[in-house]
Amino acid sequence: MNFWQRLPKPFFVLAPMDDVTDVVFRQVVEKAAPPDVYFTEFVSVDGLQSPGREATMERLRIEPNLNRPLVAQIWGNDPEKYLKSAQDIAQMGFAGIDINLGCPEKGIVARICCGGLIGHNDRVADIISAVKAGAPNLPLSVKTRLGINEIITEDWAGFLLTQDLAALTIHGRTVREMSKVPAHWDEIAKVVKLRDEAGSDTVIIGNGDVVNRRTWPEALRRNRR
Ligand SMILES: Cc1cc2nc3c(=O)[nH]c(=O)nc-3n(C[C@H](O)[C@H](O)[C@H](O)COP(=O)(O)O)c2cc1C
Image 1 (tube, rainbow, N blue to C red):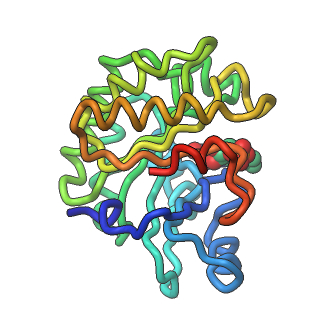
Image 2: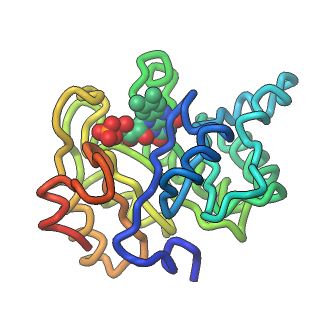
């Protein structure tokens, strides 16, 4: 049983945010209104495996007084660098590793990273295998979107659900939609259904338009599982 499965339901995650969810921010949140799980900002595996590594390592600092699981989120597209980064992270004391397959930033997508990897199933399978090989004792999760230009929930989430992930965060928008439209919680509910039909243990986390613990999107309330 990994920590994702032990969380009381419903649980609440502080979404990873670049330049926001750093070590200082997390300490403030821990005092003010702690979530059930924290993520780091996304951390480049290219950066981690480069001569300038020390600067990137700052993003993986762990505060000693955090009382909830902290998951390291990484991104890139080279399985070998994922493997080495997972080995590094496994030594640091994180509760898990998350692969970012959702960031919609144009330059990153053009380099076939993050959201740009959606639909590149073979490469993504290699990345997932590499992280599992590098950190076999850490639960592995993925955060992604519904598609790049079109919603392809059945194909994409269906594929990810074959990858034996501990958790899967679905940001209910496509890459093209950025954050400009309401999140499609009906599609997130579809992923839960696909998971149940596949008999998978993967914990599904819905993301998008969640304002706080109490004011959840209506569709989430209806589909809360
Ligand atoms: C400033 C900012 C930085 C973000 N950085 C990341 C990141 O590093 N990794 C990630 O997976 N998502 C990142 N996101 C996306 C959020 O985690 C989340 O998926 C998105 O904001 C959708 O939720 P919302 O509708 O509540 O805004 C970022 C979002 C914002 C606003």
